[in-house]
Length: 231
Image 1 (tube, rainbow, N blue to C red):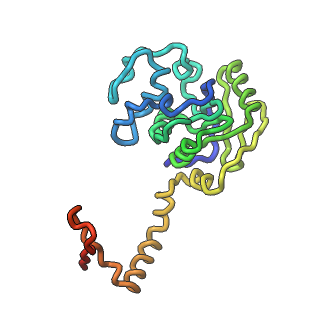
Image 2: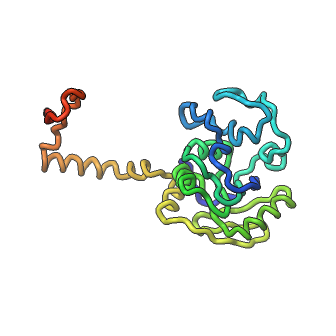
Image 3: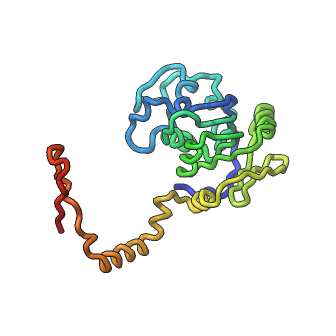
């Protein structure tokens, strides 16, 4: 996972509340295997005028000329500005993968759906919650100032506007540490692999009976019988 410290990026606005994960990535693309290839289908039903199936080449599709992701002024954006309750709906992690693959590194909104927010933090995207009045100001600025950019500093937990004004945001210490190191929970655990292995070896030395495992051979007809054990 790519570490997050400080970024300065072009801002793209999605000016509607309650954007759900099916809008971010429609359900049919969840049939795709792996964790890549989703960026082309980000906001699929808003971004394109035609339909597609998983794996289709999106370069030949008819694009909606009025949708923000298709406007030349927002190409290369890395910060998505959104309204309240962004990421509501189903808990699909694929929506976060699609945002990340398109190039989004940070999301700025008044609030996020809780599961979506957690999925972002576990996949290297930083969700920044700021007061709604400030979000209104940012939408106005993005609309009237082409090339509007923000700086998001995770180390000191602030968003800086082009005029130098800084706005502090909150994040729990564990999520902050994981993002700064570019780690998820698995990566964090693997940092202690030697200690875990040493503990496991010592535990078996102290309690050798732990090496015994139950035989997983019971059938429905054997319900009520005691499981067999083997070394």
